[in-house]
Image 1 (tube, rainbow, N blue to C red):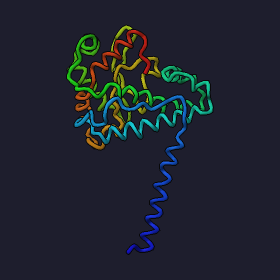
Image 2 (tube, rainbow, N blue to C red):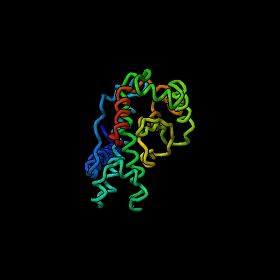
Image 3 (cartoon, rainbow, N blue to C red):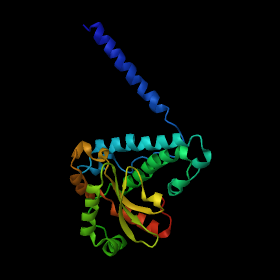
Image 4 (cartoon, one colour):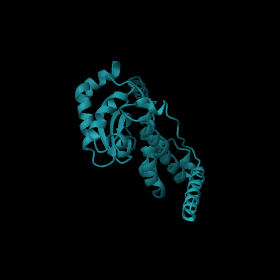
Amino acid sequence: MLSRRHLLTGATLLAASAAIPRAWAQAPSGPFKLDPLPYAPSKNEPHIDAQTMELHHGKHHAAYVNNLNAALSQNGELARMPLHEMLAKLGEMPETVRTAIRNNGGGHANHTMFWQIMGGSGGEPSGEIKSAIDRDLGGFQKFQADFNTAGEKQFGSGWVFVTVSRDGKLALVTKPNQDTPLMDGARVLMGNDVWEHAYYLKYQNRRPEYLKAWWNVLDWNRIGERYAAAKAGTLTI
């Protein structure tokens, strides 16, 4: 037999859960979309667990897209601007939406790149990418160590990136929050997310361990395609 108190508690929980789909259904539509992951969420196991991938993509990235569309819903002219151009001209954006574009547009661009470069088997790069790393970043071992150190030292939330110029020159930079080198007019070859939501379920506060493991899931073929696109002037986000 269920007590009246249990029945009331159950009814309250059902009512609350019933309200969640309606809230998500009202997410604003707009010009920006959340593309599906290009591989199964489990593809990066055991280095990045499937649950983290699902939450990171389906909740965190989705929220950036929804928030960006909401911010632009009353500004049709901005909504027609490509994201990389919007971020490059961030200082020219209306003050009423500038912070939303910075945080959510940056988050959308960063994560779109992030999913693209993973899902691989790691290892070391070859071809033009290897030559560029040797030339500009001191060789793969030094590059890997410097990249991980930069990620470890990034205070709080942020990203560590490799930028690429039109002539193929590489550089290592870090950015706080969801800032991106696109805001400086640069192009991003690759980058790693060091927000806690990217690794906390598996690694807790062990960010260095996550940074080291991440190299095992890189897709160097895809990164090579981004490098070629940067040199051709067609790489956007």
